[in-house]
Each structure stands twice: as C-alpha cells, then as structure tokens.
Image 1 (tube, rainbow, N blue to C red):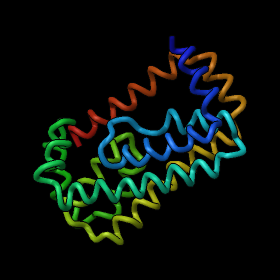
Image 2 (image 1 turned 45 degrees about the vertical axis):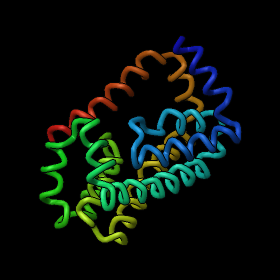
Image 3 (image 1 turned 90 degrees about the vertical axis):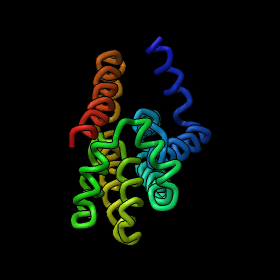
Image 4 (image 1 turned 60 degrees about the horizontal axis):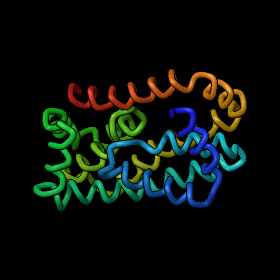
Length: 192
C-alpha cells in the first residue's frame, strides 16, 4: 500500500494541481494544519528536479503568508481559535514557557524554531499572542522558511536521482523516520 501511494504521489507530483496542493498545505501548516508540506514538496522536487528553486519559492511564500494567518489567530483570535489549537495539540505548558522569553528573543526564536521539527504554527500563533512586532515576525519567518525550503531544494536538486533510488528501495524505513521526526517535534514542543 505504501509503495502504491508513493507511485501515485510521484505520478502526480509534476502536475499543476500538485503546485496548488503544495500552496494549500504549506499555507495551512503555518497556521492550523498538523502535517508539514515536506513529503509533497520533496516528491515534487524529485519528480522534476529542474523546478526545485520554483518549488522552494512557492513553499516559502505560501508558508510565510500562512504564518500571517497564524499570527492573526494568536493576535486577535487567541481566546477562541488560538486556545483551541493549543489545547488540541496539548501545547499549553510549551506555550507558557515560550511566552516568557518571546518578547526578548522573538526574532531568534522564530528563526531557530522555523528550522526545527517543532510545528511552525506554534511559532506563528505564539508570535501573535505575544504581539511581536510584525516586521520582526515577517523578517524572521522569511529567513527561517527560506533557509529550510531552499536547503531541501538544493540537496534534492543535486542529489535527487540517487536519493530517489534510495527512497524507492527504503520506502518503509524512510516513512517511519519521517513520522518519528514529526512526532518528535510535538514531543519536543511539550518539553521545551
């Protein structure tokens, strides 16, 4: 079943519909959606390595724009939507710790956490709750998300064909590792 799903994703990864799906997932992940855009993003690059830089731009731009929605959720809708998201992902203790140091180190926190497996929506919502300066928020978001998505694009652009063969041979292992990293992000969030 995993191989069949992989083949379906790879067959559709080069289509224009996939780009719109990437925009939607990347946007949503920055504000409310639990899963990162990376599996689709990486599949799309592996399907068409010549589009790596365009896809990095698409993913970065839609993630930063989605981050603005996350910021707004924290800034204006925290008591209704923001609290619900934090409770849904069991992030209250992380939220309390994070808020204490946020105003002092906001730019660096956003830049650092935007590169980790910690869900980015947490950073965007916390930024809004802390009412971090929007300019600082946007600058840090652009730096963190650009670095993350362009780094992946660079690796896949230059090692893509060999990496694709490796992925196809070890699909079960790689899927397990990705799921563990996502879960680790949520666990780290609970204790950091």
